[in-house]
Image (cartoon, rainbow, N blue to C red; front, side, top):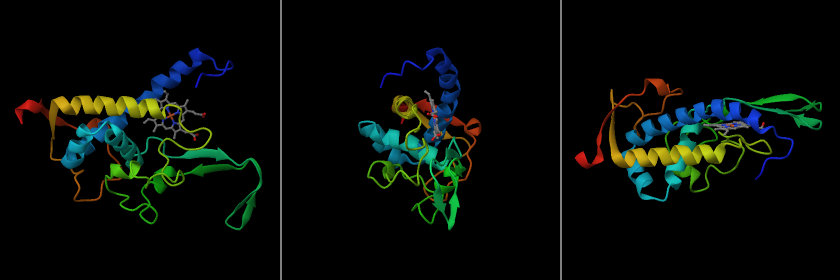
Length: 192
Ligand code: HEM
């Protein structure tokens, strides 16, 4: 969709520059997850790119780069037995909802298929790129760039986590993951 005439295009440049930082973090965390889940990695390299895209979404569900979504009510709002006046500020702690085992089955596990088969689609519980009228406009470019980089890299390079990864299928995934602490040994895939 073209930008409206009221948009200052030059002012958009800082947003793009700073906003790509979380895209790189998400891509690196996805890399660590895929390497720790060889069966998902094999399928992600074999399909048309949908699973790699879903894997990026799943990594941002597990470790959101925007922890809270902010909203103001636009009308008097009934909430837990009280009425909030118009203009009340709300903080939606998506980072909590994403890992709430009471509403998200397998909340602490890497399950990218949930983004392919409709389980993640209610638009209320899982919102790593937000939802509604101000959903992140960078969503599709982030998912496209990150998944393309990952598929291109992992088709050519075999990565082994050093030290061995704690992110495998056997245990719950940690609540935080420092992307700058991830280390891998690399060799060409044809050396398998
Ligand atoms: C992993 C990467 C990213 C994530 C998880 C992410 C997530 C989000 C979230 C949750 C919001 C809040 C929306 C709301 O208030 O409901 C947002 C806003 C926004 N994002 Fe992103 N974002 C990412 C990368 C990017 C990139 C690369 C761009 C630019 C190309 C971008 C552009 C924007 C803009 C312009 C807004 C403000 C939208 C508005 O208020 O209308 N984001 N993003």
